[in-house]
Image (cartoon, rainbow, N blue to C red):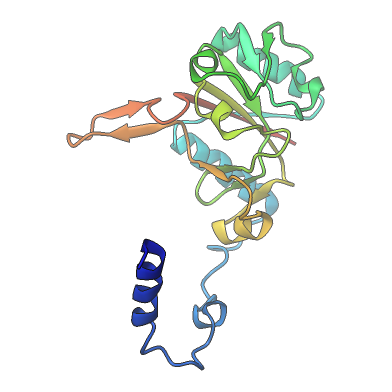
Length: 213
């Protein structure tokens, strides 16, 4: 008997007392929970997102689409970024005003090379107001997961209000579970047993979010 047969045997024994007519999982698990906590206008939902992003120590900027290139340039200049990585599907106009050198997004880049990049800029798939969470799904304007985890400074652009939802259930309805989803709630941070906060351990030390009307 091999390992596969042993595992399947244990599964069969565990299911031996389950009635054959038991409802499938999709029907057995109730889905009548709240999809949104309270009623908010679109403007109030966006404001809640900004508040919760700041609560997680993300730096939030607001601008119009026309001002986005200048805002990106100002953010990178304030950071002192000399190099910036942008996924291949990112709108080239977003970086039109910056003087930072473009670092090529390559599958062959090593973690050490990515660690030397000053900043990375991406779009996002969806932003959740109630939790202050950004979700990336590996789309062309977001790139591979590692480009947003290794560099120390991540600039994420959120289109308002199209990419903003109130709650996690609403976000899940928009996302493809087969894609590589990265959920980001503020800059990377952890605490030891004495609750000493350390940032930049599992991802960027600094997260800046630009909400574009």
